[in-house]
Image (tube, rainbow, N blue to C red; front, side, top):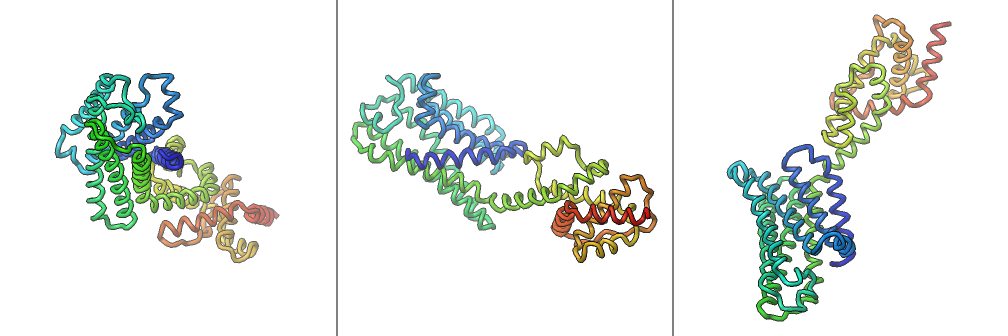
Amino acid sequence: MNGALTGILLVVLWGTVAARLPTLWRDAQQRAMWATLCALALTKTVATPGVNSVLGELIPHPQILPHLLGVAAAYFLLRFISLITAYDAAHPRAARYQPLLAGVVVVLLIVLMNATPGGISTTGADLMAATLTPSATAYWVVLNGYLGTVLVIATALFWRISRSAAARLLRNGLRAIAMGTFLVAAYAVLKTGVIVAHGSGLTLPLQEIEPIANALRSAGTILAVVGAAVPAGGKLRSVIRSYRSLWALRPLWRVMRRTFPQVILFSRRRALVELAGVDDVQLRLYRRVIEIRDGMLTLRDYLPAGTLAEARLFVGESPALIEACGITLALHRHDSGLPPVDNGDHWAQVGGEVADEVAWLSAVAAAFRRKEPAAFTRRRTATVAG
């Protein structure tokens, strides 16, 4: 296999596996997809010469381990297809038959490998160097027959779904997956045909065909994995923006959490779980806005009338900084144990959209960290005391 393609493939696979790790907590479909990608990443890793030679010192016949892991990847892909098409609902026994079939394939491969003198050769040069025994030919027919069948099913499904996908990004991603699985299926058919022909006594230039076939397989795998990531591109950008907003709101939110712990909707332990990406980051952002607003609602009782007008004279026409000055003064009065006021000032009114709230509170949180709010509070407190 081409070294550059191998490196790209491993980076794409393991990066996708790591990125999708939080989806294990969502549903069975996501778990099946993650298991497919993880098994595929392990397959390609174990197939590299360096890793395979190290495994050869630990276990016998390490060259077939990528094949067994490939069967596992195909099984999980089949489970994913069954789940997204509701095949299990119409065929309740499928969940039992599918692992049974995969297990039978694995057992057959091991039996055929042990029945082959010298074991199974995996490189083109080794395969062409000697006459293939019937057991070796049967080994490749069973392996590629199972993998090819699953890949053909996947190709047909993803292409059919892509035709009805409304969003262009999703449609292109599904078509990329279909093209990728088609290329890998074509590789399986091509390799099986060459091996069967060689086992029948025909001489083929496998040394010339093998690099092209391996490149075809790698390109197909990369295309399928990238295609699986394409539909999530828009959501990923949205998630990144939400995390940036969470970080921007953090200074103000931490003050509210410390001052009014009762406004926090979930415990700290639950928040730590969410940091791993288990829950929707958008939901975290909405909760954070609500918690800040609840804290500010309580603080309004400690904001004397005329405070925001005085803050405007102190800092100028900067709405976010004026609001931050009011929050700092109200926090100081609350922490000092001063009594609530009867007719206090009101916080700035913001549009009804959550995006408007996030943008406004992010600006206030940034202003809250500046020196002007603390300076205004000291001056206002000294003036009242004097």
